[in-house]
Amino acid sequence: MASQPPKDQWSSKTYNEAGGFVPKLASKVVELLSPSPSDHILDIGCGDGPLTAQIAQTIPSGKILGLDASESMIKTAKEKFTSTNCTFERQDCAQLNGTAFAQGQWDKVFSNAAFHWILGAAENHLTVFRGLFAALRPGGTLVFEMGGAGNIAEVHTALIGSLMAHGMSKSAAEKANPWCFPSVEEMRNFLSQAGFDISLVESEYRPTRLTDKSRDGGGGLEGWIRLFGDSFLQVVPEEKRDEIVSWAADCLESIVTRDGGSQWLGYVRLRAVARKPM
Ligand SMILES: C[S@@+](CC[C@H](N)C(=O)[O-])C[C@H]1O[C@@H](n2cnc3c(N)ncnc32)[C@H](O)[C@@H]1O
Image 1 (cartoon, protein in one colour):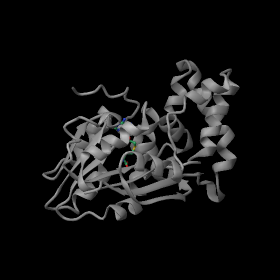
Image 2 (tube, rainbow, N blue to C red):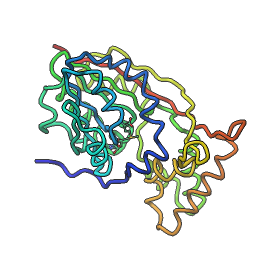
Image 3 (tube, protein in one colour):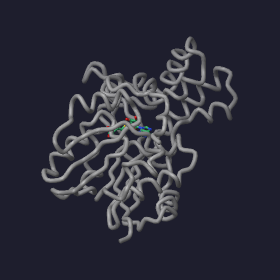
């Protein structure tokens, strides 16, 4: 039976404005994917689809299916990027195991910037990796990039600080965290417990420039906080949310702003390549 996706916190329009840089910074993980022309690829947490479509162009005799839990993201992906070898479906990928998408039919399972959300919301991390394992054919490859330990630590701290400054206890503020940012060692454990043979798990500190209203019409630091930090805002009444955002943005401003006014967050990327044994 199809599972109920979690509440949709995503809007493809807002994602474009505040997070449009995310799919554009995926060159290293796409290089690791190294698609063969006839590959059948499953893209987990595909968002609004530009990266899925980019990969589709490199597999003319293959196909790629993008899955995402967000209705808004999948609607936009379908409208903008559906083609003969590129399709999209709505699916909660924390619950992949046992679905029609996880029947050992994929040569490669790919993901960019989605596993920290999926694992963060999952009750059991191993269940998620077992679903990915079940999706691959024997000998198939899992290739992904996600946030790793220490990712965006400054904004994470500012959001917890803002909630505490507005009267929330430390433990309640910490519970609002939607993400799971594993270390290399933790990821090795997840993968090997699920049965994968590990080829690579690496972490990279990659400071990342935020969008900017004057440069690219983007949402800047506040836009980033409102979109990606939404779970921290949902735990307070609506009328308090602007204040939570302003407090965190104010606290972060001098730390993330560089010469010339550009704003950067301390992204840490975790990349992995793992194979399902033959
Ligand atoms: C930062 S976006 C990355 C999108 C895309 N991969 C890219 O590179 O632009 C994270 C995506 O993960 C999706 N997501 C979060 N939790 C999910 C889940 N449980 N199952 C499927 N998708 C999920 C979100 O809806 C969102 O589209």
